[in-house]
Image (cartoon, rainbow, N blue to C red; front, side, top):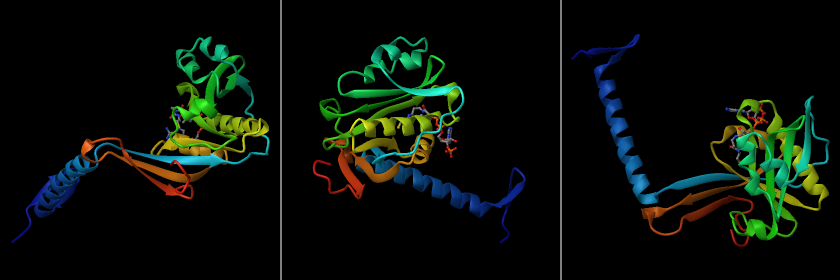
Length: 215
Ligand SMILES: CC(C)(COP(=O)(O)OP(=O)(O)OC[C@H]1O[C@@H](n2cnc3c(N)ncnc32)[C@H](O)[C@@H]1OP(=O)(O)O)[C@@H](O)C(=O)NCCC(=O)NCCS
């Protein structure tokens, strides 16, 4: 029997191929439904770390980096920047990328008790976690985040922190690229599953820190 050609755009797709594709898509939809039922919501994060940065950070013309106070952030004319102020306070350090006096990028580290409340990745003494990183939307793609991470890491090292961590959503390509460009390395992958949507999520930690106590 001859295949009945079905015209799709510029291609003639044989009828049986179209039927097979439709069946495959149906099966995939059922598999996804079943997986969602069995595993519930999921999250996949990469954990990045940096021990020390000794080289000077590159500074694009017109930009500078600085340790900033809560008021510098909350007083910004830009609402996106002002909204970040709550990340500051006791147990936090904030670093900004400034163009003149305007804050265009920010990152925050938490340590000690402040981070303990969150505790996604338990920290040892003299360790801190970068809990927020943001570049203003209109300033993205110019290397601000990468340079800010480098500057901030270097300053944290100077302040006596021996290791700093960050948690990055697995598909956040700009963030993954920014950390990699700043010299940070991936040290673990953390997968959280919530089977049958029952109680607290089940955590799987892959990587050389998998044996860390408390993780
Ligand atoms: C993540 C974020 C801070 C990056 O800021 P940025 O100043 O644009 O970063 P950089 O300019 O240093 O770029 C980092 C890398 O991402 C790439 N990149 C930028 N935008 C991208 C996009 N939309 N898609 C893919 N890659 C992108 C850049 O090309 C660069 O890669 P390269 O080193 O290969 O050239 C910014 O996108 C942001 O504020 N996002 C919202 C908040 C967020 O996700 N924070 C991170 C939480 S962990």
